[in-house]
Image 1 (cartoon, helix red, strand yellow):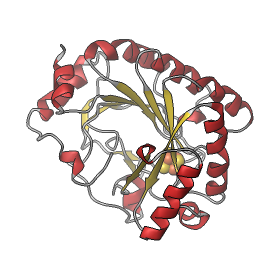
Image 2: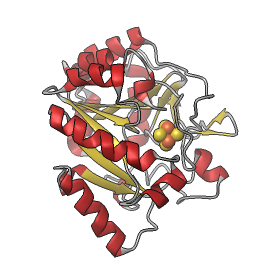
Image 3: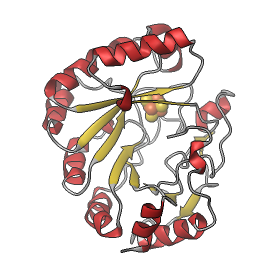
Image 4: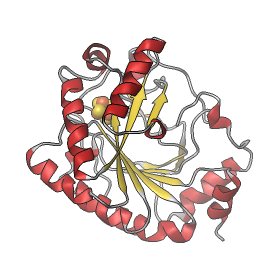
Length: 275
Ligand code: SF4
């Protein structure tokens, strides 16, 4: 077994390998870690690098892929990328679900019955709080998109960020996702992390490497300790959680990660429930 495979088995690091597909987004949320927006540079992760990583990840011992950004579905080749990745390992792709109309929806239909699940952001059971943080009409677009995807047979999860809800508001949110046929196991709730635009807006909890999930994360700028690592503030990439500028061959960032993981107690990421 590979060294990273063994570390994954022992719980020293997570089995999901993350890919930052791009940094641009059609939204500009108040707590966005990457300062993504329609005006942000795309910074696409090279398609041939994605293919090479996809081909090597199983042998290394990774157990799944994560794809995030930016909004991954801003990339016209995203569905092709996801289909390629899922041929190797199950895939979780994070999305704001606001682009799933017309041609994009037609394309996304190809994910039905595959090993790709889409994790969609929805922060409250009513429009106000969600739309204040995300965008006008965001709630309406998301609650329209989710049932369409579920009806197509696409696996959907819901991610709720932030924690200013009352118990009643939490219960209403759970009722809403259950009404879409999405189980409690497929609803995650996590705090806003005080990085990126959230830090500029004085939002969220301060988290260190020990608080954040140890999951190798490949971006156009290098490899990071966690998907919460390659954040952008005032236009500059944060490098405090950078493992290596070299992303391929994977041995280079893996060696850097294992060196740190050897000294890291297992399960530290459970402290702030950041997953
Ligand atoms: S939080 Fe997600 S949806 Fe919002 S601007 Fe950032 S990448 Fe886009």
